Length: 212
Image (cartoon, rainbow, N blue to C red; front, side, top):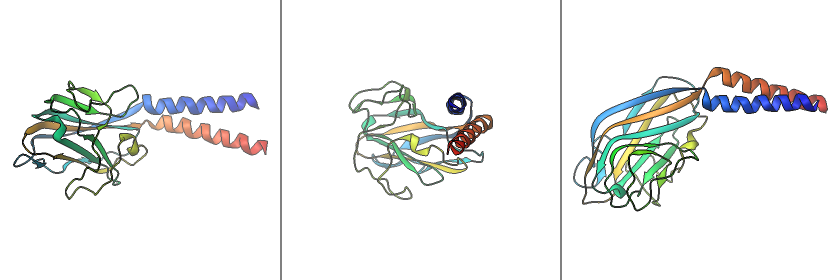
């Protein structure tokens, strides 16, 4: 009986790994340029929100968002909020980078192997964890009201289908910037991974019932 339980638990662990490693990756790109802000030296970007209309189906394994060709004369001014079709709102960039000038493609994906953009210093283009240092950030309508989540893992398990919205806001005057494109990347577990996981859970449940 112990060997069977061990086998079922092993299958569940393998399936969980498969769900991450053997995932279907979907990418959706919105092409600019987008001015940050759209007018003056503070306020919403010139397209607000930037939207991604997702017609594919499945449930989120992980989400990444890329701010492509990003440039600005004061990194700290940029706040960025991603909202799922279910209404989950994650503030993934806020008050990061200090007075430095971003100059390239910046991707955000929550992963323990990644670091955040520093609070007060320059970060080269690359892939980072969510990087939010501000408190009480607000976005004008039609963005949802806060408070906002601080991790892209909050989207885990949600249905991907529908409109995802990216709100970019310049929260201080005196500086300007732009972005050339934005890309939303969503990973969905392969069906085979979910079948193995379901079988493992069903088997373990059966063993528990027999023990009773």
